[in-house]
Image (cartoon, rainbow, N blue to C red; front, side, top):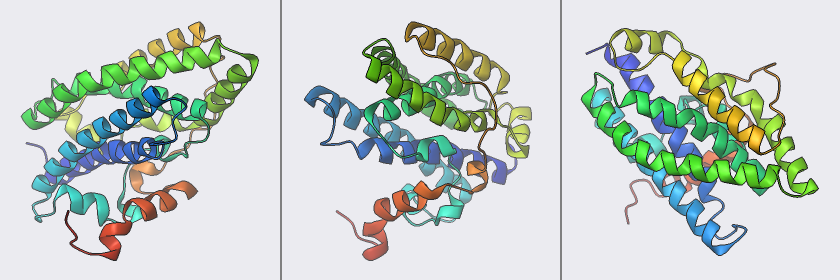
Amino acid sequence: MPEQQPLLTYLLRRGDDNLILGQRLGEWCGHGPQLEEDIALANRALDVIGQARNYLQYAGEVEGKQRTEDDLAFLRPEREFVNCKLVEQHNGDYAHTMVRSFLYDAWHLPLQKALTKSSDEQIAAIAGKAVKEISYHLRASSDWVIRFGDGTEESHERVQHALNSLWTYTGELFVQDEVDHVLVKAGVVPEMAPIKAEFDRTVNEVLTEATLQRPADAYMATGGRQGVHGEHMGVLLAEMQYLQRAYPGAEW
């Protein structure tokens, strides 16, 4: 078993990624472009929040301070969240939301597949369940990117604009620091090079079919893994954490 702090940090990163994305997707509930898609988005939000709960529950066990997944979700300040910046970006229009989901899904699926082989049995079990859900998520987000890109002139422009805007947040997905290096050596987590290769393959295939231009790899925004977030994060947490902050210990 590796040192507990690297494992705890890694679990928080996986949990926070999904928790924040789930909150963003949940904001669409009642506002989807059509009834079926409205329900589908809500279900996807529940899927990733369920994945977040599994990772955060395990993080609480590793931490050993008797904090539950709810404590970690609702009672940490912004600087203690270690999600990637991609998931915290505002929803924008529907093309923007779908591109954000697609880029995350294209990274998330190969990562979770690799984690099914983790030497940590609990991580492997969490990932095994998640893979089934994420496979559907990637199909759905890919279909929407293709539909928008190969659709009308306006839909093509909107989805290309979204892609150009969000691409700067993709670099952070593949950065590995000392936390990762310790866990890679222990066989708990994978190297990122194969994940990046699979991400590139998926992105290139979908963008080609969507007649979209892949942005150049230039400046990449980072810092989320160290708790440094953008302007949208504070507003998101204020809404997500309001009930527990206003009524500590409240239960349904």
